[in-house]
Amino acid sequence: MTRLSVPMTAAILLLPGAGYLALLFGLPLVLAVLASFGVLTRGYDGGPTLAFYAELFGTRAYVDGLVFSTYLALVPTAVSLMISVPLAVLLAQSFPGRRLFTALNKVPLVVPGIVAAFIVMTLFDRGGTAARVLAPLGLDLPKLVRDDWAIGAVMATVWKTVPFMTLIVGGAMASINRDVVLAARTLGAGPVATFWQIQIPLALPGITAATLLSFIGGMGAFAVPNLLGPVYPLPLSVHMYVNAFERANWGLVAAMGTTLSAISCVVLLAYYRVTRGLRAAGGAR
Amino acid sequence: MAELSLTSIRKTFGDATAVETLDLSIANGEFLTLLGPSGCGKTTILRMIAGIAMPDAGEIRIGGRRVDGLPPEGRNVGLVFQSYALFPHMTVAANVGFGLKMRKVPRREAEDRIAAALDLVDLGRFAARYPRELSGGQQQRVALARALVTEPDLLLLDEPLSNLDAKLRDQLREDLRRLQERLRVTTLYVTHDQSEAMALSDRILVMRAGRIVEEGAPEALYRRPRTRFAAEFLGQTNVVRLIRRDGMAMLPWGEAMPDAQSDSAYVSIRPEDIALRPDPHGPGRITACTFLGPTVEYRVELAERSLRVRQTGSGTVLLTEGTGVALSLLVTPHPLAEGMA
Image (tube, rainbow over all chains, first blue to last red; front, side, top):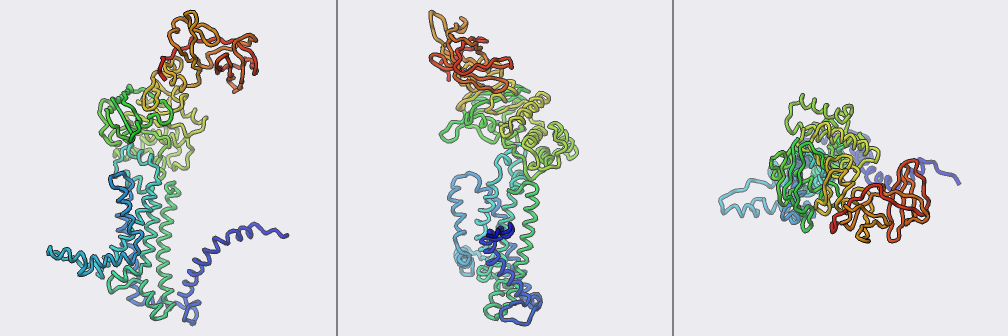
C-alpha cells in the first residue's frame, strides 16, 4: 500500500474544516469580486470591465450611499462604545439590583433589529407615543425618524448594539487579573487612573473586537436605516437591493458589495494591528 | 518607614469569620511574619492594611496616622502579590515607574529612582523588557522594586515566593532579607511556609482560624512553643504525653523529665532532639528508615506509640529496620500549655 506524503495527509485531515470555510465563505467572496469586474457576472457577458466601479463611483446617489453606510457603521459604534465600556465596568461591580439590571440590559439581544426599528418608530415618529405624552406639556419632540442625521436609525442600532458590546467588553474586563487592578490602586492610582491606565489597555482586544463586529454590522445595515433613515441618501445596502431585484444589475451589486467588504477589511486590518501590538507587549489575553 | 498598629480589627464574609477581633503591632523597621495554613485569615489582614479589603470593626494606624477609612492610594504602602500582578502591557521600567507617575514625580527624578530601584534588585539591564519576557524570579524582583521605589511607609508581601521553584525561592529569600536589613523598611510578610518565616522574620505570629495562636522570635517559637498547633506548624515534632510515676514525670521510653518541667502533661520534642543508640534490650524498635542525604529519618516504635527521630552528620551509622534502640534527650523539651490546641 502506498503511504501518503505528510503534506498530503495534512491536507486531507484539514479538508473537513478548511474545505468548508473555503467552499462556503471563500468561494462566494471570490465570485462576488470577480463579478464586480465583469467575470462570471450574472446577466452580463461583455468580458472583464471596470464599468461597474465607474458606475458606482460616478453616480452621486451611490457615493452618498457609501458615505451614509460608513456613517451608519461609525456613529452607532462610537456611541455604543461610549456607553458600553463604562457600563461593563459598572456591571462588574456589586450593587443592589445588579442581577435585574444585567438581565434587562440583555433584552435587546433577543429582539430582532426590525422589531427594534418599529419600537423606535412607534415611540419617536411624528404622532408617536413620546410626542403624544409630551404634547399636553407644550413640548415638541425634534424630528428623530427619517431625519437628515438618521438619529432614529442610530438610536435603534445603539439600542441593539450596547448589550452585545457590553457582553464582549465585560468578558474582556473580567479576564483581567484582579490583583493587577489592585496593585495599581496600592501604587497610588485612583479609580479613574486605574480605569484608563490599566483596565482599558488590558481590555483593548475585547473592545476592538466588539467595535469591529459592530462596525461591520453597521456597514451592511438594511432594515433599520430603510425604515428609520432619511429619504436621501439611502445606504448602499438599499441600493444593492434595488439594483439586484428591480434592475437586475448584478455587476453593480457585486461592485457595491466588494467596496463595502473592502472598507470592513481595512477596519479588520486596523484591529489586527492594534491587537498584535498588544500581544507583543503581553497585554492581549 | 513607620510602625503599624491594628486595634480590635475584625472581618467577616457573610456568616464566615475571616479574622476574629485581634490586635497587632509592628515596630518601625521590624520584619514581622503572619504564618498559618490556608484560610487562617492572614491574607485578609494584609489586604485590610493595604486598603483593598475593609475591616468590619477596629482601627488601623500606620506611623500613628489612622488609615482604615482611606482608599488604597491614600495609604502609602507597597504591596507585593503572590501572582506578582505586574502590568503586562508595560515594560519593566514603566511598571516600576507607575507609582512615581501617579505621584507626579518629575520625569528626570523618576528615571533616576527607577534605575536605582532596578539596580537594587539587580535588574537594571531588563528595564526595556516586558514582564512576559522575564522568568518568575525576575518578575518577582520587578514587583519588589515597584513596591519599594515609592518609599512606602510599610512593605506588605503576600506569599511572594510561593510560585517559584525551591532553589530560586532560597535565593530570593536571602535577597529579600538582605534588602530589608539594608533598607530597614517596616515589613509584614504573609506565608504558610515555616522555613521562610523563620529565615526572614524578626518576629512570627502563628495564626489559626482567624486568631493569633502564638507569637515570638523564630528561635523561641521553634524551640519553646507554648501550643501544640505552633509546635506542629513550625516543622516536625513529637507531641508526647508525660507519664506520672512516683511523683516524677517520665517520657514514654522511661527517661525522667527534669523537675522544672514536670507540671505539664505534654511536651513537644523535635525529631533532631532525640538521640538513638543500638540496644537489643532498648524500649524502641526501628520500623522505618529514610535516608535523605544530609539527614536520616527514623520511625521508632515504642510500647504505646511511635516517634519520629532525625539524625544528622555523615558519621551517622544507618540503623536498619527491626533494630532495637535506646532513646535519650539531647535537650530539655519544652512543656506545652495544657488545653491549648
